[in-house]
Length: 224
Image (cartoon, rainbow, N blue to C red; front, side):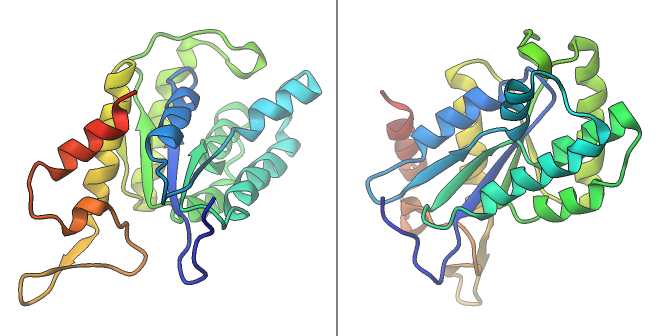
């Protein structure tokens, strides 16, 4: 694994969404699709899932802050990879604290942390709901959580994109969204040349004049 140079921080991709919307599967697929010989990736799993498996129950209100803080800590602790894919962030903990316990105290911390991500993807509600142990409350919770999530992101000023589709199509849409955001981070100089903003993404096709470059690169990443 090639360490990230000291002058650069990892690029962070957040996957958010209501329960049973394919966040974990998509995070795993992105970690594989974005990996390259000269580009390392890491996936940060959901802390709540580990917590429930260990404790055999769902957390109470006073236990929510520690879960949110640990989720953030694991992402920020990674500094030797180029791309981090987070299977949820503290914002989802804040949303469920609000929904289940009427506690809105985690929003400030969660939204401040969310602004540290370069890409925020929201998984849509087009996948069928599936039971998954202690973590899931039922299909009736998905729409309220989805609405709360979109409202919170809109208030925060965070740029985000909803991802729909099944199987490989969902991954392809996520990859297209990432490339779109990467290219949007390019600023134009007076001479018409493109230059990367400080901390922006850098992809091989950024410097290519071939309009099919991004398509071919994406196809290569998605192929077996």
